[in-house]
Length: 268
Image (cartoon, rainbow, N blue to C red; front, side, top):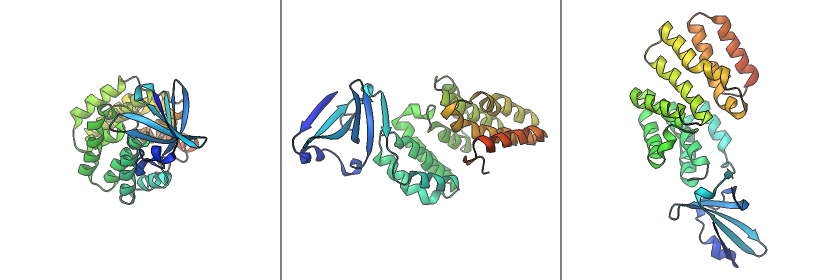
């Protein structure tokens, strides 16, 4: 890490692109937390944090390997745009998420935005556009195909495209990744993959045992539970209903609505 001190604000400001000027956040490294205007340089492959110190501006350069944590403020209008996608109004959110992907490059929100951009295209029935959006992410970051919050939307696209063999390989990698979110999401993805081959009583039970129910019963801790259990509970309920176990289905739905009433899955 190196620090660059400018006596005039203009000297430092000139190095910061207009698109990144309003991105505020905190990047922490071994020397502490650096809070201010944050940007990522594609040229140097490093982060910069600009803060004021007296009458001058201090710009700290941090390599990705030195970053211990990052907390970037949410883009303006994020919650409203996400809500539009979740309500099936993805067409109205495409420009927004496309701009966030570009503006927040390597700044925490780019992969999240790419996820909702692909979801927005899917809500319009445009699987090819959703795939194009996903592939642009995966080409730049191959790990995103099987690890992290972006991966499940890519799996959903692959399933709709009928690329089951590729999907199976990614689910296996996700399960072995060591990342708890990814392994849990892979179980849900495995349930979806099983049902995509047909909804016989046998396949429905397999989707439950090998997928949805394992997440509903085992992934009950903190943020992971909020991220994964609503979908797992909803899909478990659907499966129980299809094999004529209405009582178990009602139990799943009751738990879903009691614990996660704000989830889009509780509203379906």
